[in-house]
Image (cartoon, rainbow, N blue to C red; front, top):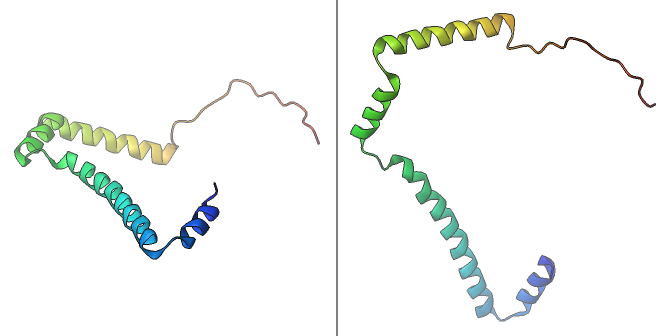
Length: 99
């Protein structure tokens, strides 16, 4: 059954049936949106203290962070000047193609 024939059948039904379909359809769509909205909060469940502890553990000491930042800076600059990692081929073979 195509969507257009379904809509044609729905238009032929009484108004209270059409309103029932509209209500349950909108409720279903709203429930899906609400579920995605709730799922987005799972990353924010942790307390601020736990978030800070996790960030400090990932960062290491201030010296390590500074060295990693400087290393990343020089890598970015060298990629900017000399281009990113280039692929080189040892040989190129040219074959005739179809016209």
